[in-house]
Length: 195
Image 1 (cartoon, one colour):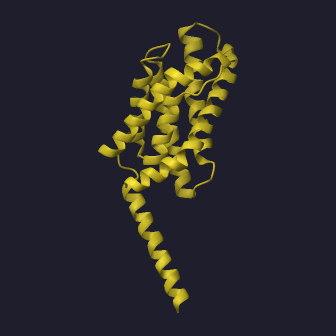
Image 2: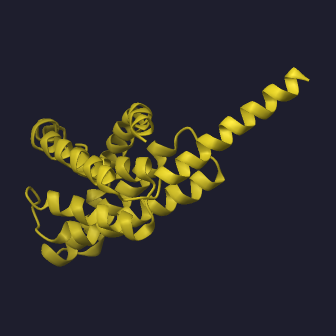
Image 3: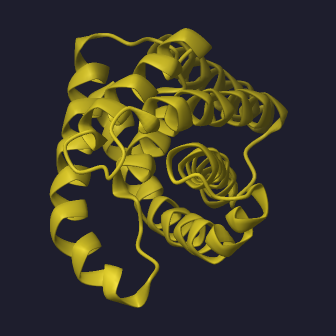
Protein backbone atom coordinates (compact mmCIF):
# COMPACT_ATOMS: atom_id res chain seq x y z
CA UNK A 1 0.00 0.00 0.00
CA UNK A 2 2.79 2.44 0.87
CA UNK A 3 4.44 1.78 -2.51
CA UNK A 4 1.20 2.75 -4.27
CA UNK A 5 0.87 5.87 -2.10
CA UNK A 6 4.48 6.84 -2.90
CA UNK A 7 3.90 6.28 -6.62
CA UNK A 8 0.74 8.42 -6.54
CA UNK A 9 2.52 11.14 -4.57
CA UNK A 10 5.45 11.13 -7.02
CA UNK A 11 3.03 11.33 -9.97
CA UNK A 12 1.20 14.25 -8.34
CA UNK A 13 4.48 16.10 -7.70
CA UNK A 14 5.51 15.57 -11.33
CA UNK A 15 2.14 16.83 -12.56
CA UNK A 16 2.37 19.94 -10.36
CA UNK A 17 5.90 20.69 -11.67
CA UNK A 18 4.71 20.29 -15.28
CA UNK A 19 1.76 22.63 -14.67
CA UNK A 20 4.08 25.23 -13.10
CA UNK A 21 6.47 24.82 -16.06
CA UNK A 22 3.60 25.33 -18.50
CA UNK A 23 2.53 28.47 -16.65
CA UNK A 24 6.06 29.93 -16.71
CA UNK A 25 7.01 29.03 -20.26
CA UNK A 26 5.46 30.75 -23.23
CA UNK A 27 5.04 34.06 -21.43
CA UNK A 28 7.02 37.13 -22.36
CA UNK A 29 6.40 38.96 -19.11
CA UNK A 30 8.61 41.59 -17.47
CA UNK A 31 10.95 39.04 -15.88
CA UNK A 32 11.33 37.24 -19.22
CA UNK A 33 12.13 40.54 -20.95
CA UNK A 34 14.69 41.30 -18.23
CA UNK A 35 16.26 37.88 -18.88
CA UNK A 36 16.41 38.63 -22.63
CA UNK A 37 17.94 42.06 -21.93
CA UNK A 38 20.60 40.60 -19.61
CA UNK A 39 21.51 37.86 -22.09
CA UNK A 40 21.74 40.34 -25.00
CA UNK A 41 23.79 42.82 -22.95
CA UNK A 42 26.21 40.07 -21.91
CA UNK A 43 26.36 38.89 -25.54
CA UNK A 44 27.16 42.38 -26.78
CA UNK A 45 30.03 42.69 -24.29
CA UNK A 46 31.32 39.22 -25.18
CA UNK A 47 31.15 40.04 -28.91
CA UNK A 48 33.16 43.21 -28.34
CA UNK A 49 35.81 41.47 -26.22
CA UNK A 50 36.11 37.70 -26.56
CA UNK A 51 34.54 37.64 -30.03
CA UNK A 52 36.99 40.18 -31.40
CA UNK A 53 39.90 38.33 -29.81
CA UNK A 54 38.78 35.08 -31.46
CA UNK A 55 38.27 36.79 -34.83
CA UNK A 56 41.96 36.29 -35.65
CA UNK A 57 41.17 32.57 -36.01
CA UNK A 58 38.60 33.38 -38.70
CA UNK A 59 35.82 31.78 -36.67
CA UNK A 60 34.19 33.35 -33.67
CA UNK A 61 31.00 32.76 -31.75
CA UNK A 62 28.18 35.20 -32.51
CA UNK A 63 27.14 35.67 -28.91
CA UNK A 64 23.96 37.62 -29.75
CA UNK A 65 22.60 34.64 -31.68
CA UNK A 66 23.63 32.38 -28.80
CA UNK A 67 21.84 34.77 -26.42
CA UNK A 68 18.51 34.67 -28.24
CA UNK A 69 18.80 30.92 -28.64
CA UNK A 70 19.28 30.64 -24.86
CA UNK A 71 16.36 33.00 -24.25
CA UNK A 72 14.05 30.97 -26.50
CA UNK A 73 15.16 27.71 -24.86
CA UNK A 74 14.52 29.10 -21.37
CA UNK A 75 11.30 31.03 -21.99
CA UNK A 76 9.86 28.80 -24.74
CA UNK A 77 7.87 31.70 -26.20
CA UNK A 78 5.18 31.54 -28.83
CA UNK A 79 6.26 32.29 -32.40
CA UNK A 80 5.41 36.05 -32.41
CA UNK A 81 7.28 36.48 -29.12
CA UNK A 82 10.31 34.59 -30.47
CA UNK A 83 10.31 36.87 -33.51
CA UNK A 84 10.29 39.86 -31.14
CA UNK A 85 13.33 38.39 -29.37
CA UNK A 86 15.00 38.05 -32.78
CA UNK A 87 14.21 41.71 -33.55
CA UNK A 88 15.71 42.79 -30.22
CA UNK A 89 18.86 40.76 -30.91
CA UNK A 90 19.18 42.17 -34.44
CA UNK A 91 18.84 45.67 -33.00
CA UNK A 92 21.69 45.04 -30.56
CA UNK A 93 23.85 43.62 -33.36
CA UNK A 94 23.29 46.83 -35.40
CA UNK A 95 25.84 48.56 -33.18
CA UNK A 96 28.70 46.42 -34.48
CA UNK A 97 27.49 44.91 -37.75
CA UNK A 98 29.37 45.48 -40.99
CA UNK A 99 26.14 45.75 -43.02
CA UNK A 100 23.41 47.67 -41.16
CA UNK A 101 19.89 46.26 -41.45
CA UNK A 102 20.94 42.87 -42.76
CA UNK A 103 20.78 41.26 -39.31
CA UNK A 104 17.01 41.82 -39.26
CA UNK A 105 16.66 39.82 -42.46
CA UNK A 106 18.84 37.03 -41.04
CA UNK A 107 17.84 36.86 -37.37
CA UNK A 108 14.06 37.22 -37.59
CA UNK A 109 13.63 33.98 -39.57
CA UNK A 110 16.39 32.31 -37.52
CA UNK A 111 14.61 33.12 -34.25
CA UNK A 112 11.41 31.67 -35.74
CA UNK A 113 13.33 28.49 -36.66
CA UNK A 114 14.68 28.25 -33.11
CA UNK A 115 11.19 28.64 -31.69
CA UNK A 116 9.73 25.97 -33.98
CA UNK A 117 12.53 23.51 -33.17
CA UNK A 118 12.21 24.04 -29.43
CA UNK A 119 8.40 23.89 -29.50
CA UNK A 120 8.32 20.69 -31.51
CA UNK A 121 11.08 18.91 -29.63
CA UNK A 122 9.88 19.88 -26.17
CA UNK A 123 6.50 18.39 -27.02
CA UNK A 124 8.17 15.24 -28.32
CA UNK A 125 10.52 14.95 -25.34
CA UNK A 126 13.77 16.70 -24.51
CA UNK A 127 16.82 15.31 -26.27
CA UNK A 128 20.00 15.82 -24.27
CA UNK A 129 21.69 17.74 -27.07
CA UNK A 130 18.69 19.91 -27.99
CA UNK A 131 20.43 23.18 -26.99
CA UNK A 132 23.45 22.36 -29.17
CA UNK A 133 21.49 21.06 -32.17
CA UNK A 134 18.85 23.81 -32.15
CA UNK A 135 21.44 26.57 -31.74
CA UNK A 136 23.67 25.07 -34.43
CA UNK A 137 20.80 24.94 -36.93
CA UNK A 138 19.56 28.43 -35.99
CA UNK A 139 23.03 29.91 -36.44
CA UNK A 140 23.41 28.15 -39.80
CA UNK A 141 20.09 29.61 -40.98
CA UNK A 142 21.06 33.12 -39.84
CA UNK A 143 24.60 32.81 -41.21
CA UNK A 144 23.57 31.48 -44.61
CA UNK A 145 20.95 34.21 -45.06
CA UNK A 146 23.50 36.86 -44.03
CA UNK A 147 26.28 35.40 -46.22
CA UNK A 148 24.04 34.99 -49.26
CA UNK A 149 22.66 38.52 -49.17
CA UNK A 150 25.98 40.12 -48.17
CA UNK A 151 27.89 38.32 -50.93
CA UNK A 152 25.41 38.60 -53.79
CA UNK A 153 23.43 41.78 -53.15
CA UNK A 154 25.72 44.04 -51.13
CA UNK A 155 29.09 43.01 -52.54
CA UNK A 156 27.77 42.09 -56.00
CA UNK A 157 29.42 38.68 -56.08
CA UNK A 158 28.19 35.50 -57.74
CA UNK A 159 25.93 33.16 -55.77
CA UNK A 160 28.66 30.51 -55.96
CA UNK A 161 30.98 32.73 -53.97
CA UNK A 162 28.76 32.16 -50.91
CA UNK A 163 30.41 28.73 -50.62
CA UNK A 164 33.59 30.49 -49.50
CA UNK A 165 31.66 31.66 -46.41
CA UNK A 166 30.58 28.12 -45.41
CA UNK A 167 33.53 27.42 -43.10
CA UNK A 168 32.86 30.65 -41.20
CA UNK A 169 29.10 30.01 -40.99
CA UNK A 170 29.47 26.41 -39.84
CA UNK A 171 32.38 27.23 -37.53
CA UNK A 172 30.34 29.99 -35.89
CA UNK A 173 27.36 27.62 -35.62
CA UNK A 174 29.56 25.02 -33.92
CA UNK A 175 30.94 27.60 -31.47
CA UNK A 176 27.44 28.93 -30.67
CA UNK A 177 26.11 25.41 -30.16
CA UNK A 178 28.87 24.60 -27.69
CA UNK A 179 28.33 27.86 -25.77
CA UNK A 180 24.56 27.33 -25.47
CA UNK A 181 24.88 23.63 -24.60
CA UNK A 182 27.34 24.54 -21.83
CA UNK A 183 25.28 27.41 -20.37
CA UNK A 184 21.75 26.03 -20.71
CA UNK A 185 21.68 23.55 -17.75
CA UNK A 186 22.80 26.13 -15.17
CA UNK A 187 20.59 28.91 -16.56
CA UNK A 188 17.61 26.55 -16.67
CA UNK A 189 18.01 25.88 -12.94
CA UNK A 190 18.19 29.60 -12.18
CA UNK A 191 15.21 30.34 -14.42
CA UNK A 192 13.13 27.60 -12.73
CA UNK A 193 14.11 28.87 -9.29
CA UNK A 194 12.92 32.32 -10.27
CA UNK A 195 9.62 30.84 -11.40
